[in-house]
Length: 187
Image 1: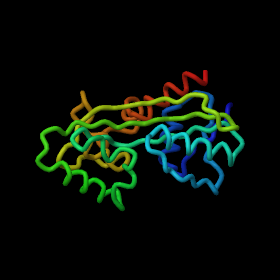
Image 2: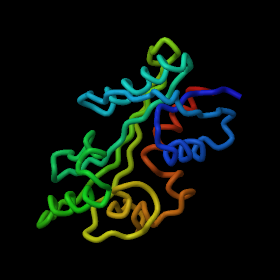
Image 3: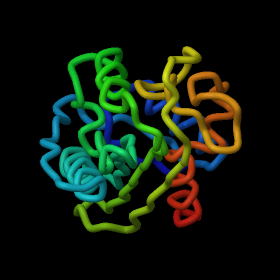
Image 4: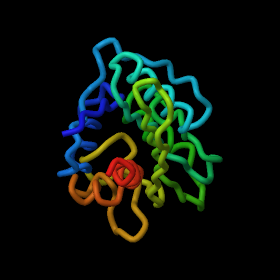
């Protein structure tokens, strides 16, 4: 079994990656405890690379990182790379986003995920981008998933990401779409 460091401190995200990878014969592990990269990139690609290289530097192993966020058309792609820092708590982030969209007809949005796989020396092996399109609804529905999931209704589904089971979400999510490309490369 191949061991790859997944550059996160978020156990929920690590479990999601493991679930998506399924029986891929890859064991995803957390980086060392002192993993604390400074995400000062201007794009998902740059932040993903920063995290992957830091995990590789600390662990000496092949490392995978993701950077993801919600990009809303009417807000010129915001909150984008600042999705996790858009406000101080998940609920405040949702409220701030809904307030910013008050009166907007265009509520189209997409979740974007960029994953970067680097070798132990920090050189890029592959970088993959996954997306899922939808729209921002006005009231929260569902309790599963991450921050914006209760207000993001997926195109082609009459439900939010938060109303989907983990299994359903892991088949169509932006993270799943990016990881599928990484796993194909690793074969």
